[in-house]
Image (cartoon, rainbow, N blue to C red; front, top):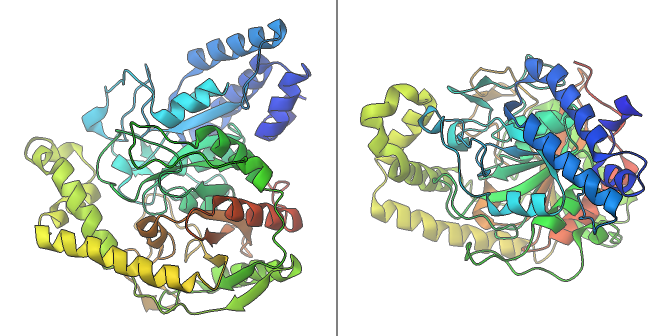
Length: 468
């Protein structure tokens, strides 16, 4: 059973532990051994908390033996992206400026996962403060894709996705300010969920992502992500934007009937450039929703491209947060981060306010469109995984694209706050994963999970694993 344990789902591991078929110590040791073997290739972890994990596993084992009440993630290994505070463990944000930063408290999602019995493996890599959607930083270097280590896993939760995809724990906590859960999920062939804004409370942390940041799960199965969301969701007054807990469970929502749902499919949102390989895989996946009993319609929403709005807001926030550090610390920072901070210097207060007003206008267009549809489908990313450590593509299908032109489908739904997930849709002819994004109406996390689980049932992806 030892080798098989790394590919078991979180729910399977939890049930094996409860039935005493396997001990939390055995699970943890097996996953730590996998980490030790795989991470020199991937660089998915910036901190391995082996001693802490072993101590937590021993405590979990004692609780099982004593017959104590067990949490929904009891004995399940979980990793945490290095932008989320972990008590007693370094939280650097991938930045040399915080290389020695050790928080006194856990972030709310981390505390909830631990209270549910999860065993914290360590911290996963990110770009510096998550400022770009690939995973590389001056502090920890380049993270690589388990399907092909020459390629990027995406970002900025790239370490989290690479870990889950390669069998280093069935669950990971990531964050998503413009696609940072969904992009690496697509590039690594796993499931990534950006819950509704406020669904998972998160206070503090590194600045620069106000109004758009979501904490969400990465997992190899939809139901594993759902059980983690059950643990994470619910209001906390430390985050005044957090949403009250909904009735029922997200795990139960995965069994919801999707027959009769009205589903819109757009290959390009009406303005994006998409690699033909990605488009072909995603079109095939979208057609599958017809077999699930959904009414699928091809659409071109006609919305404006909100890239300028998004860039204005985030650049201004990064400038406000970090510009004072440039004089002394610029040499320590990622050059792309420095450039982004400096871009924010040109944003005036009226520019910023107008951008916020344009977000409201954009939401009005999206909301009106979704009065007709329960779900909106599109590619998660416009291109397959590209070279690790290299700039993102500026040309798709022979046409020049903007800076964010390779990832046009994710950040719009950070602006609107809707739930959105990336499901593994299939592979290109050369064996690279492609993700399909499923976007729901406002606060309809359960519908997104039900659709994701229904798709997983007819297009299962769990048996195909990277063999790096």
